[in-house]
Amino acid sequence: MKTLWKTAILFLLAALVCGLSACGCDDGGDVVFVQTGGEKVVSVLAEGHLGGGGAQNANGSPLEKGNSLSFRGRDTGWPMTVTACRGDRGEGPIASVVIPEAPAKGERWFVYFQNGALEYGPDWPGEG
Image (cartoon, rainbow, N blue to C red; front, side, top):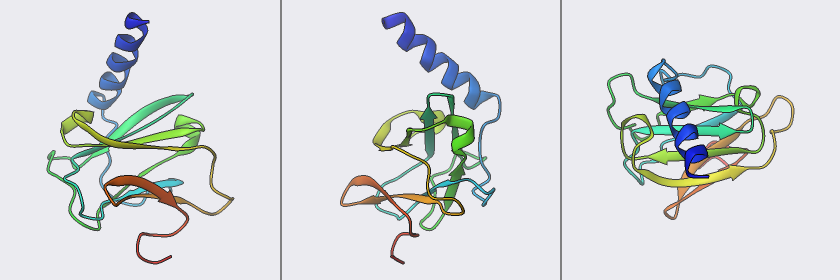
């Protein structure tokens, strides 16, 4: 079990090093992490049964309030676990949320901090 866990972590780190970072722009992902400003977030991970990846600012700086990073369920599979991290490349996880299924066709899930925990819903934080 310990070897499986190490292999999973190494695979995730290798994927991050190989360039699975985002520009903070909208690339059509069906899950969008939105920095609401409550916690210092540097990187965000998305993992599912098909694989995982991470995103952060290219220079490794913390996300500013209103910044967003998107992920595609077709890349990770469902359920998808989204984890916000304090450090570069997924270091120092703060909180996670599991999204059990894809949003309705043409819709998105928005992931954000509320009361110190990660939540998700169909609306941009503060608009629903």
